[in-house]
Amino acid sequence: PIALASIYGGYFGAGLGVIKLAILGLFLKDNLTRLNALKQLLSLVVNVAASWFFLFSNHVYWSAAIVVAIGSLIGGLLGGKIARIISPSYLRQTVVILSIIIAIVYFLR
Image (cartoon, rainbow, N blue to C red; front, side):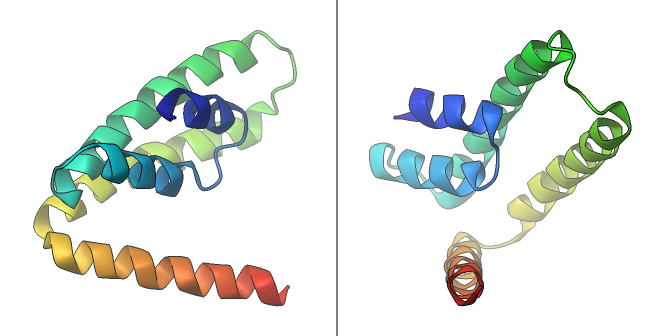
């Protein structure tokens, strides 16, 4: 399941983190903080592989790609630090609440 999610994420990364976290949570018995760290590592590998593919495809808008790369690096660093500070139960509640809010917003659109 992770391989299929990774292929999807390499092309269209929206929501991949939530999908991976859900899959990892189903198959691995560990706390949410450690699963999130594993998800981040898997995301790094997937994004590097996809980046190499797109790098040579000649279909990259470099100005947008640089902004996304910088934002992703900053978000990954901050997300990892925040995940270590936040309690697993609070993190789980936050993920569920934000997921429900996002689902409602998309449903209403």
